[in-house]
Length: 502
Ligand SMILES: NC(=O)c1ccc[n+]([C@@H]2O[C@H](COP(=O)([O-])OP(=O)(O)OC[C@H]3O[C@@H](n4cnc5c(N)ncnc54)[C@H](O)[C@@H]3O)[C@@H](O)[C@H]2O)c1
Image (tube, rainbow, N blue to C red; front, side, top):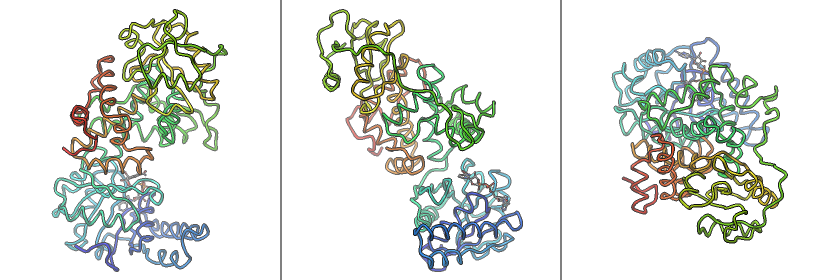
């Protein structure tokens, strides 16, 4: 098996569509010779011209020298039959997402190439073992899963099927590095890593919206300002397209035998059925103009015109909350029967907090202090609460320049809930040995631009707090989607970091 650092290493790319072009581009830019094949006559040559045009633009932007662009462009060659792949050291397949098409092509490639040639599929959803089934030498078959647009997305998942040789995985990882990507090695399982790990962010956002706790605009703003995601779950769904993320959700849900943790919501399917796919159709969770800008998105901010509170009581002793009140200039006094009563629950809703502490639920205002509160603060009240307590507190917060988002009663507010679900799914991935804990974090940060990996998020929240949020969510809602993974529960109980190996 030839090493990808060999001068004459030859990569074949089958399929010259969006992904094949990107893979050919990063291969040539990484110094590899490439032969490009497409079933559509002329498509491979046209793709090569497109790639050379991209190299020329990189020269204009001074991100590549003219000599490098010339050399990289010269490493690309179009071929018009599978027999043209005969001398390849590795073939990366990126044709239509269709099992029968891929299986037939893999058999043809296997017949054309030498015994040392690796064959990898860029499939995003088909098990590698299913594609390899019709081949004789399955040890050299694996997945090499790139992300769109390939030249900008640094991550590549090396998917190791049950029959893939260790040496194959190792050489593919080295090949990914030569292509300028960051490889992570992942087990052959539904959605692989990123498409599974990405479920929690959107599915929990959807559940919160469906339960009428907060609007999509409120959830997006909380996740951006409170947890530093570049986009909230609804903005992200509109960008990737509901026609993509709804079917992916279903593939992963079916693949994991309907694990409630991975279940999406009826409102997701309704949007898919209505053809409201997001930016590409001008409407999704938000409306868009023809330049893809959201039209009049609803405000996530709470504004009531109430006079700011000056004095509050605390439902229970809480140093962090007392400090927060001080920062707001609020005087904390014993309950006088009229002022707002504040609490900063972990996992509990306002109702349970009132019951647990004996505070008057009508004046109880719960605040989420587990995330960044420098720009936006989430407040939450129980049903039947007196809005004037919340409004007076919100006005005091707004007077310090922070925005306020007021939501309905929810165990774990919005940020705790979504964060704990992301962390728990990361722990699930570690538990089933999908990848190492460190690679899970790397993949989620590079593949989805997450500010922290899921296990880092568990650490940031604290494993014990993450566990408590999930336990309270499960107890209050009665829904098994919130059941904590044994991976998390054990580490929290032993006081160990979330990354501690099994
Ligand atoms: N688009 C994405 O965001 C994305 C991301 C990751 C993975 N993928 C996967 O990458 C693969 C390709 O996706 P795409 O978006 O580039 O598709 P695409 O439709 O843009 O391109 C597919 C190309 O394959 C060619 N083709 C079809 N059958 C062929 C055959 N038997 N031999 C040679 N060429 C053939 C087609 O002519 C077409 O040019 C799919 O498996 C897809 O699931 C896509």
